[in-house]
Length: 232
Figure 1 (cartoon, rainbow, N blue to C red):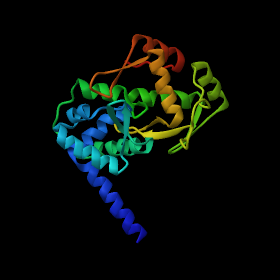
Figure 2 (cartoon, rainbow, N blue to C red):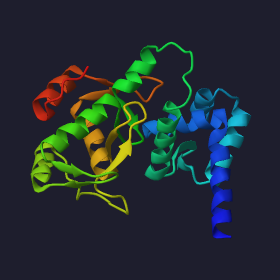
Figure 3 (cartoon, helix red, strand yellow):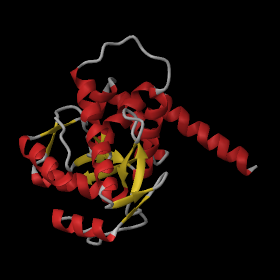
Figure 4 (cartoon, rainbow, N blue to C red):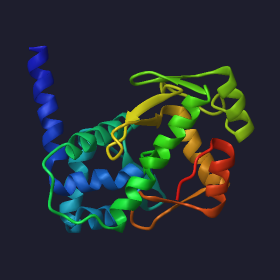
């Protein structure tokens, strides 16, 4: 009975994500920010009333969470685990049948650098993971990682303190399969802290209406001097 219930639950979640509008809504929330119903209606390509129904179903399934600020209502992904599941599905989808669609600038921008919920993905995310691993700042396994003492000092010099702030049950360092590069990038508290710090330093900037990121001139210099990375 337990496996039957598990199968039913899995099928229900898969059916929710399988709707094109809801999949687009979840994908839009993968940049880690909370968005309004109107913004999500635009991303979903449906009207306001239809979006309201989709958001209700996603909320009931604990895939998204509602935040209220005064009279305003915002929606975000319910947890890092939901984001990791969506990224994993994107990786699986990338192995599927090729679609006859020309690659445009938006596609290239996403592959170069993007947010995966609250951490970095794409070529930039992979390059960061490789650099930290090669320098023995982190030791990575199949789905997780350990930050070395040398890595702790490096992060401190970069202005990152993983012991500050609430930790909850989130692991310090995990890996997430990157759908475009098909290799793991860093997630967990370390991945989130690096992303936040890069924004603070002005190394990366958001691209409008996308979870793609641009690497600034300061970022190109900082990444090269700090991580030995050259990326556009």
